[in-house]
Length: 383
Image (cartoon, rainbow, N blue to C red; front, top):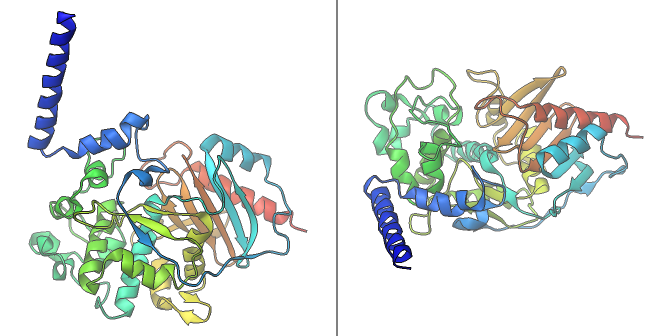
């Protein structure tokens, strides 16, 4: 019994020392990471983890439900699609044809209105908000220096960095996009309660605007620029610019670093559903116009969907050529996708728990081709 008491005391002391070391070394964000992710059996962020963070409500305006296609759900899933959905834990798969719901299915207890984490699909929204801020005169152009808004980036190479560089992932910063390392800046940004402090510590180490390097930090800086330029919280600007005007049917949530600092995680973490996510794909498919109103400048939309340096990325959108067709994509961690084919007037949305084995940061995984190919096989069977 005495041994157990001594052991318990030693463990308490060691635990206290560990906590002290985390605070001394400014890695106390790991406490939240362990509590939120690792103690729940995960090695990275997961689909429903938004429930464990501070969020801000994004309200709806006048809902505009999607129409059902005349052949709604008349074709069954292909065997290959069913296998992929089972293998990778799909929770929602939706095909929209001619702006009508042609096929939809939900899995693992999710339904049409269930919320799940967008992860990096949020980057497309933030880039769109940049375009909106330019359209409304808050930002002069894609060439305006980041330094005009964020004083931490006014010296050396950083002074040359533009808002367009942030949107096109060519900032030249030392951001390390590592999801599974607990000590990476990506992990710190996800759990730290003072995200601005994390971002202002970045260094621009290569010439901005010269090469593509996927970096969530670029979008986070862009979110901070938009807030400074507009004088509005990003979640409020998002609600007024897109969520309400596009007729979203469900209230959504956007994670913030903490209630105290109230900075949106602009690079990720909007909790919504497949059909409301799809609205942004429709907006870009229709050149920024919604119900006859120009929500976004059509020239900006066209530029966003054209590669800048790398053939797979424009301004906040992924670009994939597959089977002779050009697809535009919103993409997120673990396989969250809004896939748009403008010429065929097709939108494919897939949300789920994981994707096929990773092909490297930013590279296209095989599951994307499956979700596209099987959708087109199903559409070909439409009578």
